[in-house]
Image (cartoon, rainbow, N blue to C red; front, side):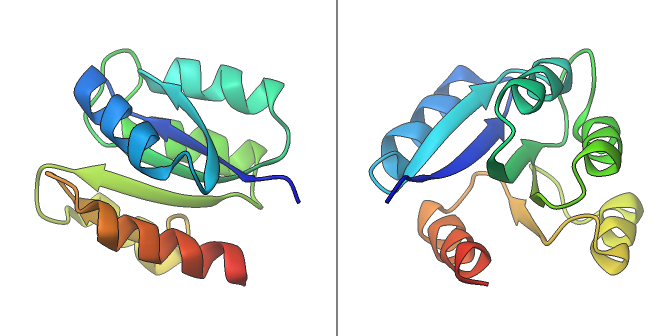
Length: 122
């Protein structure tokens, strides 16, 4: 059975590497350093099922990226990562169902792994 495809977007290389190293046994991980690259990858890989995006990035932040991506790819499950508490915009995204959940940085890979398991089992 093919692995579930996940796109992780973060402008910090160390976070991209940690995410990929820790989750690539179970999932096929694609990474991007900003929302513009994220949209390019989504256009190329039509069967990505989950996107985890950082909030603060250059060129296109997480809020802009998720707003655009959700419009084009509404069936993907989206999560947001932030070094800050939940903002009004993140809360609005959760309430509207734009994102499934907010993860706090530094991220807890066990928590993310459990959440991803739930997302793919539904």
